[in-house]
Image (cartoon, rainbow over all chains, first blue to last red; front, side):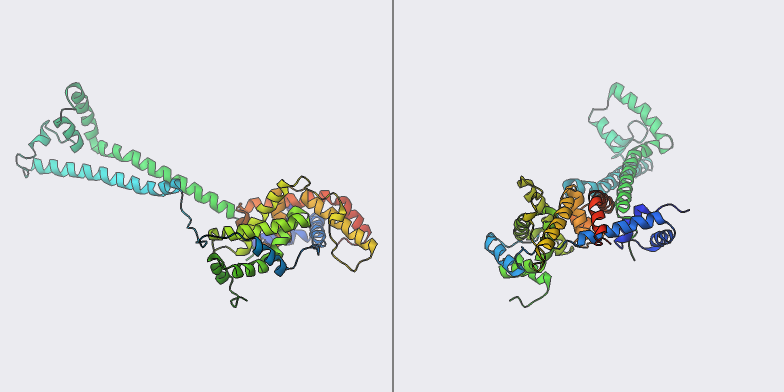
Length: 210
Length: 191
């Protein structure tokens, strides 16, 4: 025996079912006295609710409109349609992937320029102008080189950085490590967007009459 | 007299301060609004006050009405909220006396009149016993015959919530009116 369709009887009564769900309910009702009784009970309730008309005490439409007109306050300016402005959070949410893309592009550009300058220096295309880039005998990212030049990255800090730099230089690991957090943030935003879309579609997922 | 029957034109004129255009809109939607507020309030006096307040609020908030939704549904949302506000201001939320309810058929005899009043009072009292949220969904579905999606859009609730509240409301009404329905069955008035 098929499962009872009591949960769908309200929608069936209101003509909100369609497609396979409607067919399922109708087929079940043909052979289930319990669901038939429940449907008749709902029909009876609806008929009872509709059997009580509005009282005659209410004024006519024109008289009511005149009463309302007397009470309408003076509107100083026309009621211009207000535009639905998105909230700040919504703006930030939708700009986040653009920001991440911009950050990724910036990082990529920095690394690309560094490699180009280093290669140009190795080929001698820059002459003595870029000698300071290869002061330590190995190419460094521009920001690190600048820190060295202004004296921030010195002494033990410089030694530590040299060790790290050697590790980061292995297989281009440094470049990937810059991109990893950006990629993770973007994937997190994407997962949030998918979850939001799924929740929106779940709230609207209801068989309607076609 | 407003020559145009286009509701959008009337709304546009009303937005510009045309009171005649707004009065035309009031006439068009009066029956629907009065039905909603009466079923929500259960009293003719409260309903009339709520209906007037509904249209006054509509006049003041016409700028916020978005034409992509039906004006009728937008008015119903204001009507539901206004009716609930009116009820909160009233100490007596349920009509205690059947004499408060008007006759629906002036030609009926005294016995029929009293019976009709009793029927009306029982049904209306049962509707008023519903939680406000469920009552609003039931009223919009049963008396205005809005679709589930229209109710969801009007009250700004998910479709699933409309279904669950309607089911809950009908279940409560069946229980509240169970004894009354037996009486009607005996009187051969219940289908």
